[in-house]
Length: 134
Image 1: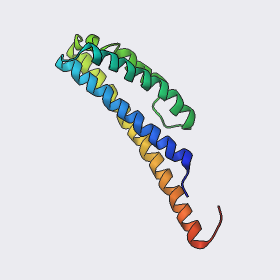
Image 2: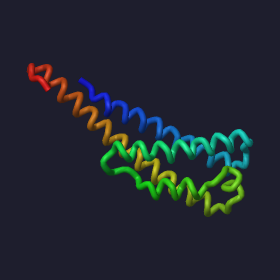
Image 3: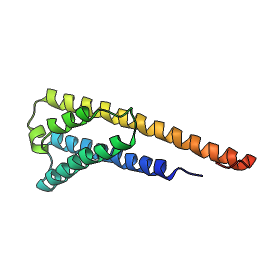
């Protein structure tokens, strides 16, 4: 038997991590100074998704997530692709370092949830094997 809420949370967090990857690709565009107005619009959309989904995820995960302040700090540090494209190299390094730290933190949370998912799946298997009801 599967825990549908846990499965849904894992899927949601996997999608959230994909948004973090997209955020990083926009930073790469800024570094290369190759972006369009459409890229700027998509970047703002990704930023809004990151902040909105953060609230949903935090409400569903007890602890162990990066803090709201860490996420907001990074998102606020990069108001637009154009802004970061004109920033000094040190700013790029700071943004990339913060992004990497948060990305790894989200990967750790996702890994913890997948361990929990596997435990639920194993318990269900052994319960069915030995005829015990949950």
